[in-house]
Length: 98
View (cartoon, rainbow, N blue to C red):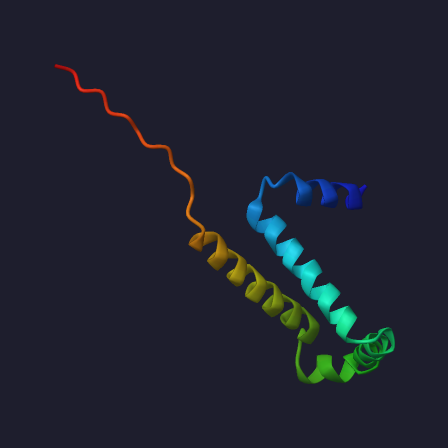
């Protein structure tokens, strides 16, 4: 059910920033997985799992901070692009009363 709601929210374009952010994240994930092999990605994930306790001891909330910083970078780029795209506005016709 969560997956269906996620797809509907992404495709509906009600929140353009959310849709753009999800599409950019998927695009980056596809590019990273094409560049790196599956073994390399699995090796990286296993290293994080094995060394999570020392990382957490020396750098509290390490993974959470990394994820949040990546999300903030993606959202900042998305907002910048959305701000640079001009919105269509209809010209208002003023009627003069004589």
